Image (tube, rainbow, N blue to C red; front, side, top):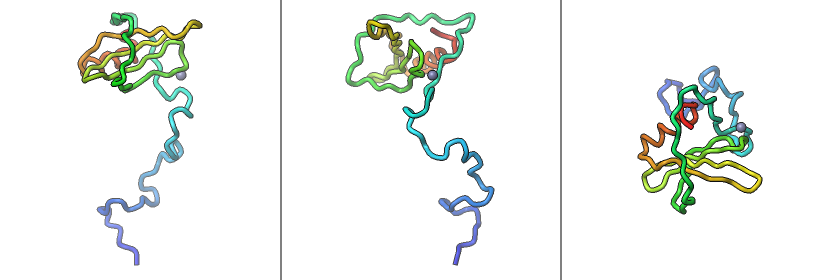
Length: 125
Ligand SMILES: [Zn+2]
């Protein structure tokens, strides 16, 4: 005999109009590589923005973790990289002769994340 639905039991399947309202959007998780433009694009650059002092990349170390990236559909893409407790942004410009990689200063996490947000929001470049 079915248990009475008291609304407190965790894990009880949602029924009727309870939840699952946006089923149409993401019926199941789709791998990101199958979704075009899954990663964010940069917003248009604001009139006033912070110039990021890009410098030549010293190369990605084996301990580099990519925390976020921009959409690969553009010629210039960016990666937010974490190494040893610091964050930096890598800028990758695709050219016929190969990728040109430069990187932002290495920053503490709050500053690195703020810089990433500013980059995405058109407030830094
Ligand atoms: Zn895109």
